[in-house]
Image (cartoon, rainbow, N blue to C red):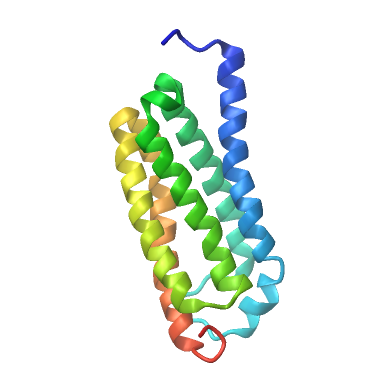
Length: 165
């Protein structure tokens, strides 16, 4: 494959960031009323304040987009098909989680989703690392945050069975 021009690289970066932030918007649509819901449910003492989630996720989505772009730059979608498909599937599960938890108040299904999501993030991280180690490294904060979110999801679900059936 011929080297990508600067213009194609910039368009590619914009495209991968767009994919990541469209996912954020889809999940965000389910979270429009998340603040009052999050404030009313019983949370463990170690749960972060609601205002922290937006900034953390903004950084994580940016890192995800850059990571995918770095992998794509190596040889395009065809050269990294498995890694980039893993990336896209985990993004879909990421968006679905917000709908399950905040939109539909399905704590158990959200927990099942986040466990599969965690597995796919780990697989994507490994696949990215094999192609471009920096791309894999950029997914480490995402994996760590989702690890924390798994524990928080489970705890909140268990503390609120009447709300998160």
